[in-house]
Length: 537
Image 1 (tube, helix red, strand yellow):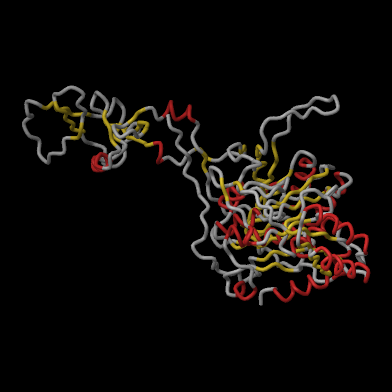
Image 2 (cartoon, one colour):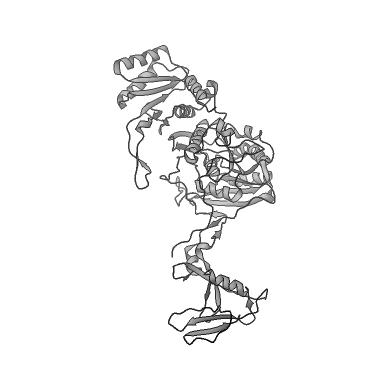
């Protein structure tokens, strides 16, 4: 039997990017910086829905790949112990509880490393009585977690703790598809046009309303003929080629519907009859909403390596997961906040579902990438003027000074420079052969191919980028970059540093005159100035 999917909300791109702005605070903004600092600036009880997916206390190193910019950088959860992790999260959760409306909802996404400690902390902050669910999401397929000779059960789930701001909150019931075995057993009847249905009784144990009548039916005296209501206004003498019958409820039973209602059900094609002539209500499988959503979510798979939405971020969550949460716990034009928004999945889902939104992330590179994702996926412009007219979005507090960039971790600085130039950071940070990133000119954009056109044709037209987080790049740095350009046969390359020595600049000039190959030496200050000049008005 064909599986009947549940009737559930489907996210569709907004017909217009214009949404009603909030009177309490600005929305459709990505803030770059520490979320604790930004949260303290928000007024009390101003957010309808909060979702956070903070770094887990996992003591693991991740290799992060951003699909749209192919960034790969190493980062660590910066919490030496569970206590330190909870101490880090507590003041942030206190602020999140403060800004949540009494009718709002809060979701905290975490894994097994600290989930039990997180639950205790959240009970203290939001109140035990405001705890609604621990949602279990199956985030991976079955696998073995055997390590160093120690065996254990495979870990395949995450926990999502669901709290509300008070005793009443926004709720839109969600449904999942019926199990096929259930459909086979419950909706086993099939109409002539192949619609599956189940039958229910039209009688009741107690009388009510217009229930004192006989149900008159007739059928032709022919093979496979079915009963149908005899709707003649007056009873006529039976015709010899028809069979007639008067049907009453079973003993000690009563009609549950009036005669007019049964007639209407028949006209709508929702009434059938047993061999005895007793009418029965028809409930069609495709019209049923499905099974009410439970707290075990196994129907949303993790993002596969070939998924179109994949950015490569190791903790990236599926868009469908965020759409489910936002649909269940908010209404159109409600304000959604993600204070650890990473690659921006929450913001994309909120925009598609016509919600207002705010995002905060400490990584400038992440903020750039999610801004690009909002532009490309949602089709909304990053523009100050259009944002003021409620038709765009903005990114705030990106670094604007050399002093800020000098404090960046090495890989984060490289990513900033490459992305600022419109390039794609190298997927390998160690042994990168002198290439920190590549710029692919628009004219060299490859064509998509494959079944779903999800694969790219190979293109060899690209320009290398080298980034040095030093006060001055010297002649040896340029010599190494030149060797790479010769090895890769590149005619143009970009070299980024805070400054260059005179020997380095002389060598760049010599290389162009002798080899006919150009190295564009760019300082951090020049990139910052260019960004300021090209910022939307």
